[in-house]
Image 1 (spheres, rainbow, N blue to C red):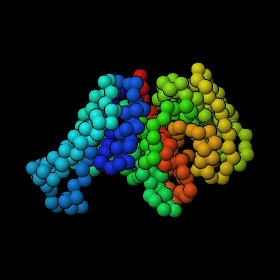
Image 2 (image 1 turned 135 degrees about the vertical axis):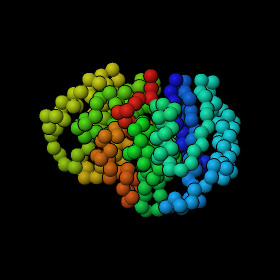
Image 3 (image 1 turned 90 degrees about the vertical axis):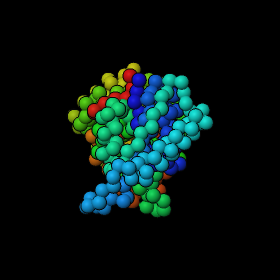
Image 4 (image 1 turned 120 degrees about the vertical axis):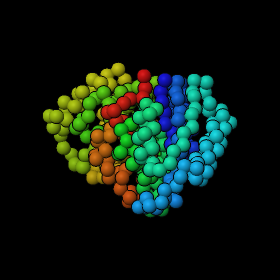
Length: 285
């Protein structure tokens, strides 16, 4: 039984992520925890005024519970309530990341699935603030679902890597399990700014990846581009990639893509989900 956390702010974006998660784990026995965290806007920044519990319940908790019941009704009406899935609603108030961390620990969460919505206009933020914070500050696997993503059966995943492998290979177990579940192929993508040969360590790590995925269909691809985001864009479009996977310890490598505020003309982030795996846990069995 897998425990999946579904944070929601009751937006269309978060509802899309919920639908995707349920379809993605369709064949798995899962407990889904739909969580809404209310921000207490009536509390001053210096905490000189604290709301009592009755006021909190009236202003935040009770309305949130009513909206969560509506979400459960939506799930049922959308024929997404599979017999081996159980749904629970959770409410909390205060700081979002603190609530996520607490829920991950208390409910033994295996994976957090949440929506992403970037800013509109020329300057696009690929990750919303909450999603970026969860990925970088919570040690739990995160499946980020962009606002326009629709569930499709996975045929090919992309795994960008610099072959540094600062992580234990076991962290890739979720990727391996997804490949096996969907009988999908893996594209291991190396991007460099100029044409250079792999060093001894990189060659050794490449061999380790070959051995790790030896029972799966995988390919290595090498791209040269001064901008990592442009290289991934080209690769995703040319190969019809269904999901991008990254390791949390390698996020510095992709910092320019996912956490900068000025990423222009990147389209894949609006419809391609990406999985960020941590060494703390895996979410498949």
